[in-house]
Length: 428
Image 1 (cartoon, rainbow, N blue to C red):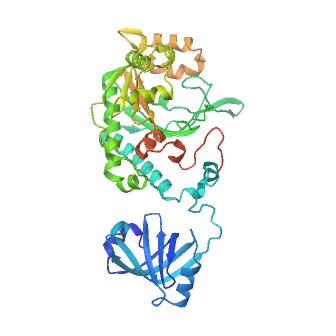
Image 2 (image 1 turned 180 degrees about the horizontal axis):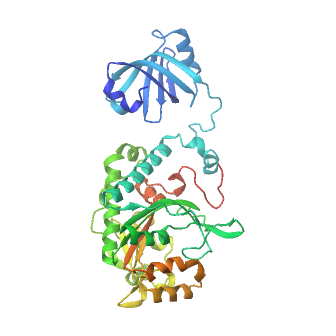
Image 3 (image 1 turned 180 degrees about the vertical axis):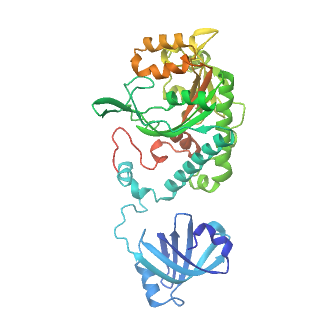
């Protein structure tokens, strides 16, 4: 059966469609039906004088989100989405919907989230998730074309990547296990097997945060590269981000228009990105009147203020070791800081990428495990990577939902994932 996105190639032909009614209007003699099938929306024009009584009765009775079928001729119409409309000769209802909960009137966020399974059908929600789908494919294409091997890291892990305070704990046959907050530790051994690897999947963080930038379940993509040191990592992260933005602009024009996204802001995302040190960032924040000092971590407001000085993503590097993870390589010129980087998106969308060069010296990594009071036994396998053929390596993580929110101009991450999980949201 033909789909709406293919209609433009069938002008003048008789076609049959099935889908759902997204809207209608009628003059009493002519009905204008907006029909959606998942690939697009088309207007079907029905004339009472030209269809059967049964078809016209269906036109009069049909309601929002009823399942429908129609036959008709495809006509050119430059004003219509896709440049075509259908002159319908037959119209029928397969399933009549009664009292559809989401009407054209305004609804509160809580109501819409309770009906997320239906809200997905709305135009802007479909557009945002279509952008998400394109970004996911672009991520896979980027790494495939650049010689990376996909490694599926486990969801259940015996140890935390950065401590257990923000992890979901579960019973694993009378042992403790945790839902993964990152696949990175499992990628590092794989980098010794394949050179360039990445993982891409769901991660979980039990952060008791209600901000628009946080979810308890989100998707993250993480590359890891053998013999890649810090400068190369910065270039990889920048090229990756630019590639994804270019892909969205190239293929998601209709979705960005539906979302009323200012694409000019995205068109300015070009290499090279501005790059400042953590120390310089602290100095800038103090200039802006922020109560912050060297050694403090950035909050959302700090990230927004820093990025506001630029029209493209800002790279911040060399953070204090005291606020970063145990596995980050110290800067050889200043051991107070690590060779870590964050990329902050402009327009207030915050951190989209975080990464570092990893410690490859066994003795230093053992020391860090001890300093962070991590269970040594749980990390013996991770230490083995340094015992047997150690090598410099680097990687980063990018949260998919934060990136998609930036692309779409979405103010909250809950609209960038089909079924968001938040501090007070586990339904539907």
